Image (tube, rainbow, N blue to C red; front, side, top):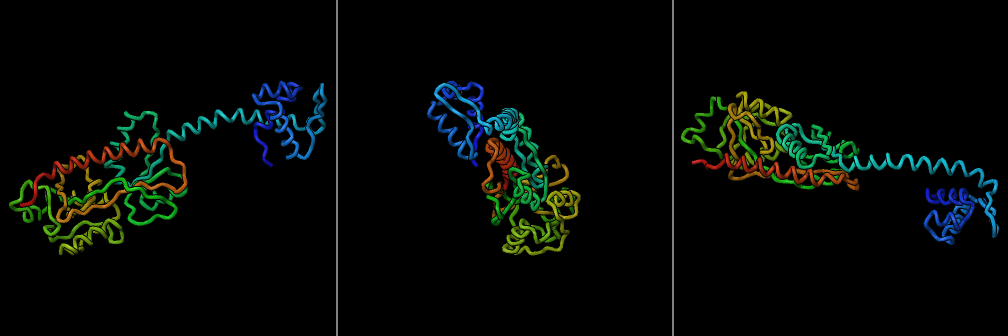
Length: 318
């Protein structure tokens, strides 16, 4: 059965006007068109709804039974329509984004505050989650999209590269090896992989994608030592390094803010290791209209952060 709300409205129009001609005028359709619509409705219901003569239109017993049902259908649809419209409008203005915790702390506050100024109607919900949870909640529909490093294909999700990030060497300003390793290089803001100090590093567990890329580059440059502290999160690397537990290597998007008195950073070069940062969405899912505004703002903030990093890295090692 394929009856539409228009069928029920046309049926009620005939009931109320007792005329196909006047009902057709009310419905803004031709009288033959209205007659065909009623024939279709009767065919689908397998009964006659009207007894029609040249002078009058009367309901059959089946038609009389249908009147309250048709009226209820029309009333409920007309009541719910504005509610659904408001929900749809809210949906278009709402964006739920899953992000890694370190990205949530280092980048998203600036994205959030800028969007409040440029797109005040955008209702942004930022959820900080580990990468597996970001994937799961985007896949289930709890999140509209997710951000992170996804080097391989993600089942049921589409990846969109947003930007590439570099890696930074980070150490405490009070590190006992800092003076030895940087003697004669004061003020330099870049360091070659082969010049990394031969000391235990604070690292992610080797099973993590980022650490695998770092280890591959270190090994290629003859720096293979990996007997340092192993952590699960990037923010833990920053905290441990700042406390003096050992130097660390972090992606540039995780560069800490407001810790200049505690840490020193340098851009890793020769080679410059770059990886892609992705936006993931569920395949086939309709995305809120505000997604593009969010993405543009995110890229603006990332570019500004990159410029600050490179301004601070304006001197090469001797």
